Structures are given as structure tokens and as C-alpha cells.
Image 1: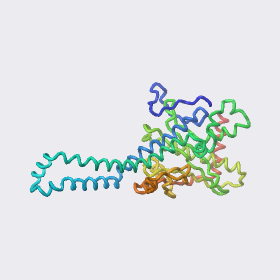
Image 2: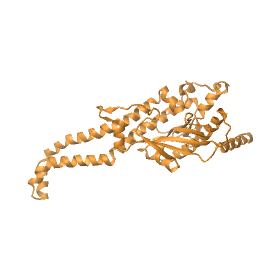
Image 3: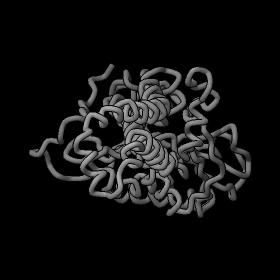
Length: 337
């Protein structure tokens, strides 16, 4: 494997590096960085979903109800014995040992919410870990990333390998800051859904490092994704030898309802939600998830707390004619340079 770019998400960027932001295409030396950033998205979803569950109205109502019931159970006798608030406070101060009866209640609350949270967050962990396997990489990139990572510079001048390497390199782009990738987007074709009249592409991954999550880089990544969808459509028409100049381009994307950053990004940019699912894994939605004592499934817990995987679609405002026009303009610029 080609020596990989070192990317440690737990360390700050090099403050001595040049503070420039630039767009970088996928290269063999960035293969591991692509996996690391895409995997980090699902790691972040663990904390996002956990926070969503803890602060969900259902959880707060549950906690308040249990504590209220426990309060009346533990201090019911003191209430009945007291003729005034002052007398109750006096009895409360002299019976502090009753507070120990709340410990089992607190353990019950923490255990219940903790179990519900774990059932969901652990599924995100499994996806993150799974991205390092061949079957997940093929779903994420639509090509064997390990083979691509082993490509050397001389392979890019080899006629037989060039189509594969070029196609792979165009699938993913990074945003680099201070010499380190901080954001990534991958767009893949969906040939099974595409026809002679409509071409489908999908954003299989779009992520920004946690410290830059609120920087608005997602908008830049989405613009890149749209550009890539048009490029993929051009290639699709050429490869399929289609005699058309009016093919529609539809770009698909997934986001989780607990992730307000991505859902807001898609909805504010004209994406339409077409369905919601409790199949938490976007790469293998048919995969069965674990259940609690064969009683409650992950899907049931997700519904209970309003966590779904939402699927979005957007029809781009151009046809293949516009794509060709833009491509020819790019070629003119290249000749002038």
C-alpha cells in the first residue's frame, strides 16, 4: 500500500502549517483518510443520538414521572404527618436517611435510558467499524479501495489502469485545511435506478470534522456533490451510448433525524424527503439489528424517540446539454492555460 497521509482526529491541526483551505481529489495516499473521516461521521452520530435521547420529551417525562412517584412513595408518610410546610421541612432534615431510597430509582432511570441509548449508538459504532471491511467499502465507494490504495504514480500513466484510477479519484473530494483533510464527500452512481431518461446519483458520505462542524463547510461539500453528479451523468450517457440530450439528474442522500445539521442542509437546499426508515444502516438496510431480550428491537426504540434515517432526493436544475456545455468550457480554459 502507498504510504498514507496521517490523520489523527484526536489531535489539533498543525498551527505552523499554511492556513489555506483547498479542495483536494481522492488520491491513493488519501484512501485511509477517506475511510477515517467517513467513519468519524457515524462515531459522531453516537454522541448526537445519545444527546437526542436524553433530552427528548419522552425521556424527560419518564424521568419526571418516576421521580415524582418515588418522592410521594418515600415522603408520603411525612406529608401526611405534617400540618405545615415548616413542619415537613423539619421532619425532612431529621430523616435524611430516606434519601438513600432514591438510589435504586436513580439506577433504574439511568439503566433504562442507558440501555435505550446503547441499542442505537452501538449500531452506529458497528457501521463505523464496518467501513474498514471490503463489503462496506464497495457500498461506500463502488470500487475496491484497497486496490486503489496500492496504486502507484506510474499506474496513472498505464492505459489499462487509467480508467479505473481516474473514475475512483473522481468519486471523492476533500476539503483540506492546514495541510490536513477536515471534510469529505463521496458521490456514487446508482445504475440500478437509472434509465434512459433519468440518471440517479447518491451522496454515500458527507462529513466535516467535529471541530469544524458549525463552520458551514457542508454547503461547500454539497456544491461539490452536485458537480460530481453531473460528471457521473455525463459518463453514464457516454458509457451507455445514449442518444439523448435531455436526461434528468436526481441526486439522493440520507440523513438521520437526530442530526439537525445534515437534515437542515438538505431541506434548505431543496431536497425532498421521500421516506423514513428505522433501518439504521444505509449500506445494508436489510440487516437485522439486535433486540433487548427478544422483546424490543432497535427499530422500536428509534420510533419511540423519533430517530429515523430519512432519504432525500433533489432534481438538479440542468440537463445533459448543460453538462456538455460546461465540460467544453473547462476544456477551453485548459487550452488557454
